[in-house]
Each structure stands twice: as C-alpha cells, then as structure tokens.
Image 1 (cartoon, one colour):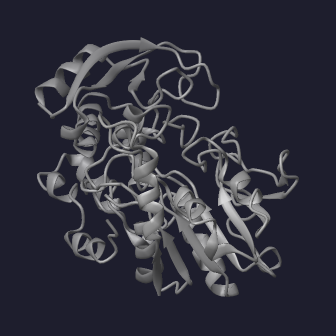
Image 2 (image 1 turned 180 degrees about the horizontal axis):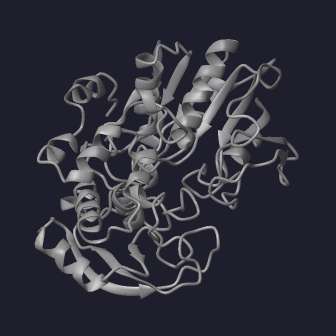
Length: 400
C-alpha cells in the first residue's frame, strides 16, 4: 500500500515564506522541504538511511543529508548513492566504490558497481530508507532502476521507503515515445515505459511498486506548490545538474532524442561543452542534416550546422573533428523530443550506411523498432507511440 505524506501546514508555510514577492509564485517545495517544515515528525526516534546524491538538497541549498543530521531526533545511519556517486563526479557507467562522507563521517555505500541495492546487513536495524534524487523524466536514466532495486530490497527486509518527491523537469503532462519491452530489462529499462512518461519520481515509485508487485511499504512525501504543466524553470528552484552531462534544462529536454543515439557511432556532444545539444561524426554533412530536420517542421526547434571535436577518450570520435547539427530549443512547451529522435534516426539511416543503427536496440529495448528503422517501414510512426495501455495505468498513480 502507498501512503501520501504532505502536512497541510507545510504548504501554508511555504506560501507565507514568499509573500514578499507578489510578482512571482512561491518556489515549489520538494519532499525534503515538506518534511523539514514539519520538523521531520514522521522520522523522529527512528534509525534511517538515505539514497541520494548532490541533487538531494533543500530549497535553500543545504544537502538533505545535513538537514537530517541537524535534527537531534532523527538518526541518520547510512548513505547510499546511485551512478556517478555522491558528488556526481564519477564517469558514466563507471563502478563506484564505497566511502565515507567527509562532512558527517557516515558510511557511503555505492549502488552502482559491486551491488545494485542495499543488502540485508546494511538494512538490519534500519526503520526507513529515504530516496531523494532529482529525476530527468526520461526512461533511459539509471536512477529509475536504482529506485526499483531499492523498493525490492526494502520489501524483502521489511523496511519502509519514503520517496521525497521532486519536479519532473519536463513537466508532468506529456507522454511520448515508444514503450520499451519487458523482455529487454536492463539498468536503462527497469520497467516497460515510454521514453517520456510524464510522472514525478514519487508517482513513478507508486507505479513500479504496484505494477511489478514489489509490495514495499512505500510513502511519498509530495511537493508543495508543483503543477503538472510546470517545466523546471517555472518551479522557482535553482537548476542543479542531475548528472554530469545534463547541464541545463535544454539538455534535459533534448535527452529523450539525442540520448537514444549515444550507444551508436555518432557523438552526442559528450566531451564537449554542449552534451546532448549536438549530434555529429566525421562523415556527417551537418548542413544537409540540418536542412532535412528543418523540412520536418517539428515544433519548438531550429537547427544549425556545427563542427566540434570531443576531447574525452571515453566517447566516440574523441580528438577528431566532427560535422553535425546543433538543436536549438526555441519554445519548450511545443517541443516533442521523441519526434526529433525519430527524425534524427531517419536522417542518419537514409544517408549514412556507416551509421551503426542496430546499436540503438540497447536503449530502445525493442527489436521490432530496429527492423522497422532498417527498412523505414510505414508502420514506424505508429510503433514510435507509447503503449496505449500505459495512459490508463499511469492515471492510477498520479498525485498532483
């Protein structure tokens, strides 16, 4: 069973705190702020752990870890971290070692490397585990799998889970892109979802817990003041990189499109100043691709031909000049990033036989899509839509 926790007084306090700024709505208060407004009442005299990284902060910029430790009635015992580690400084895909938090001297256990979930010894004596990480609203993000594995581990060990909700930076209304296949489960496909699922991480936790029959004792600490039509720059919150290469909101908005391509032999800008804003390779004609994309008349976008040279040896074409295209987001509200992803795929497949399009399957998690892309089959547009059943399933778990 899932419980929703949002004290009425915490919402009112958030409004009062911003009364001096009549021209701007109050900043959205995240789950950690709602808990703190209520003096962490539901966690008092309990031994807790937290799954978090550098994005787990309060509205005034303190780490959620430090806010918890500062309350003498809350006993934080352990910290767990997802991909990239506590400071989100580790390389993409690199295993993370355990360590000690320099500020609190608490143990830090990695959930990306030797283990993917807390073990029974780590959960022994723990009353509740908090999950406080900023999501990006796209299925490809490994933090979703970390959440799922946490729910499984806590269900097996009888430990409560509190998901401290945060905004979906792409808003909470739009659902788009092909749904993945359950037979292709991986760290980037923990559960069958469209590329853009239009849910907060708290709502997604509810869906995973029920639809996968995990049965964790799950509590969602909901935000105060968030609306489903808000993009992140409408929340009044400061942008923090959710991971090293999602450096601004436009990168997050383009990620469901360009992120799909990164396991193939093109650069998506990793190792440059503009990851996920560009796509290129030495053998691409950037001007021709930009012109083709412009003819597709996708809303909210413009394109320009660019040259760039990735400087990180971990990524394709490092040290080599790439020709390509930069995507310029003009109006986020009109943007359909998954449609852009499909047009990029079509443009590369139609023109460049050296493009290793079959490597898309790792992130698409759908073999039928690969066959349709190979032939540019007429049904590709229909296959690129979310599973119709997902809309009905999703509706059961929305909180806002």
